Image (cartoon, rainbow, N blue to C red; front, side):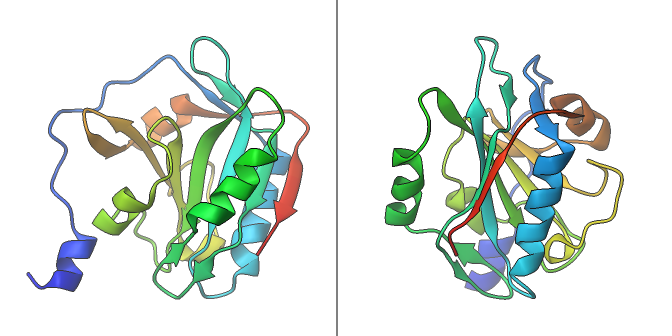
Length: 178
């Protein structure tokens, strides 16, 4: 395995994923805005963040979708600490990171080792959209919904992902800082 392959492929999980009670509530508007932002990057990987309030049991509601300033290429993207700090400093009181979103150029939605290292918070989900956001599936089938558990980013099965991320209503703010 060469250095590039080592950056892509990762070991299997050390333990099976254990479903949690917390839910991420996502409006259709937030999902649509996220797809528009990912598609606007063209044939380049791009990243977004979902922020909002989180309750005592860990459930959260997406209220802010933001594409930070970032470097994008066909196979990866990166967000500087400064760009992320600029977003976090402007968040309303009580808003927490709920999910980090990014696109892949192909149908594969499993994290790579690069993706594992790139995540900004292990308390947030990491969701991968295939084909640079040109997703037309029935949410969340075909997406990579990952959750940090036991020192590993677990790719949730479709049924687990549907329990963890639920579609609902809500008001959102959308911002593109790219």
